[in-house]
Amino acid sequence: MANMTPAEQSGIKAWLGKDAMASVVVFLVALPLCMGVSIASGVPPTSGLITGIIGGLIVGFFAGSPFQVSGPAAGLTVLVWQLVQQHGLPMLGVIVLMAGLFQLAAGLLKLGQWFRAVSPAVIHGMLAGIGLLILTAQFHVMLDGKPIGKGIDNLLAIPDALNRAFTDGGAPLHALYIGILSIAMMALWGAYAPKKLKVLPAPLIAVVVAVIASAYFKLKINYVIVPDNIWSVIQYPTFDNLKHGFETPILIAAVSVAFIASAETLLCASAVDQMHQGERTKYDKELTAQGIGNAICGLLGVLPMTGVIVRSSANIEAGAKTRASAIFHGVWLLLFAAVLPFTLRYIPVSCLAAVLVFTGYKLAYPKAVPKLLEFGKSEVAIYAVTIAVIVGADLLKGVVLGLLLSLFKLLYVFSQLDIEYREDIAKNSVHLRLTGSATLIRLPMLASALEQVRPGTDVHVHLDKLEYIDHACFDLLANWEKQHQTTTGSLAIEWDELSRKFHQRRSGAQKKAIKIKSAGLKSARRSKS
Image (tube, rainbow, N blue to C red; front, side):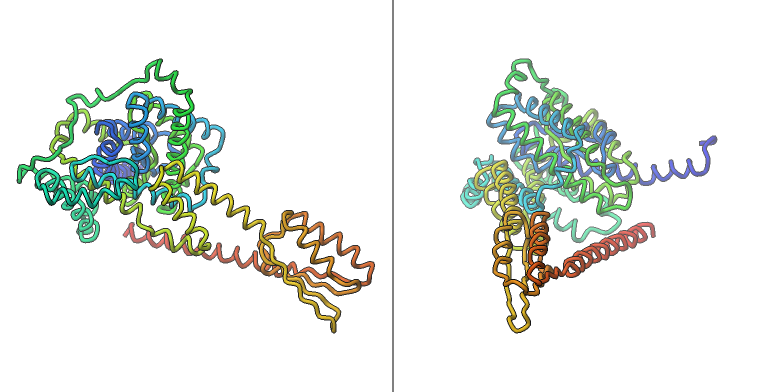
């Protein structure tokens, strides 16, 4: 410290004061979520801890989004649970390894930006559908039971599970009480906790209260089971298992994990960028880092990872200044796993299930609907259909159908053109008002309208309601004008209307950006004060 300049000393103090504290907060948030996601995925609780350690120590170092924190995510729990049921735990490592390699290749091939091209309606529908799947499956775990099967089956079985719990009593009812207590603590802590104490995450408070309550009342319910050595859950892929990696079902599973993990990570990164005024996300670099992390997770046979919005937002709110906070949260997870794993045995499984039920509820809550309505009811319809298919069938089918519906909507929008033909014989003029998109697909309609024009007429084409015009339609108008002028007629195209419309949109976007920037600066001033 003695040989350092004042600026360097100030930088170290800033790290100690901000990044170190932020890393502890993120560690406290990650600890219950890592275990809860593991149990929901059908793997040992320590599997999620190892994934969290890799997400901090390795992905945190290479990440393209310095404030994003990676680890096992609730968004993959349902898919991973299905894969474990279908292919077994030993094959999970192979699937995750291949998914990581796919992500790594996509990042190196600069495909990161393409994942951002997925329709927001599909992304929000996917997250809401995942939320419902988590909620309905973990509700049964919260009663010390097991998920029934598909999302719709779990949903329909909830009334019967509750009836049995209240009728028979015993462990399921006691577990339910602990689950309700945990949810109540998270909701109350988030709403009423003193500002100075809000640095402590709500899930951690719920776990502490649940441990105390279950110990005080000596409840005979299910508790987390962990081995004396957490590294015993590691399963390296065997040569025989790797050979199965080229089979169609395994390839489909790996692509599914890679796609969903990448979409969730980059959506999270985009959200994180809106929370701070620092370095922006490098999407290809982030995708590459996620690929490296998931490839290592696959080699160790543990859970896959994504960027996680809960941990990332906690990281920013705790005042993180560099990527060091994400990296050091992995250090704290490693130290905890090495020194204090026995403490996990006091945690009720129903409490961790309640944490995920609450998480699922927040994901499923239709907060995205008002924003989607701004872009038309069709966006809400795609959102709703995506959710319905995810819950009724499975995650992959819902996402694929949502993508197809978005594509069909795009094709429909670019194939719609309405032409209003108004002729004024007294003034020897014709007014054509184009609405929609003038593309090659609707060129015959435009040509047919122009053929109705009498020779020598003054034609006015209005574009104020036109969204797009392609080269083919523009060329048609230009060639028709040359022919029409030979009949002493004229053609006037109101380009100014289209130009003004573009500039209004551009101006509106600039004003919105200024408002966002201004709000961010005010928020930054408040946090400094």
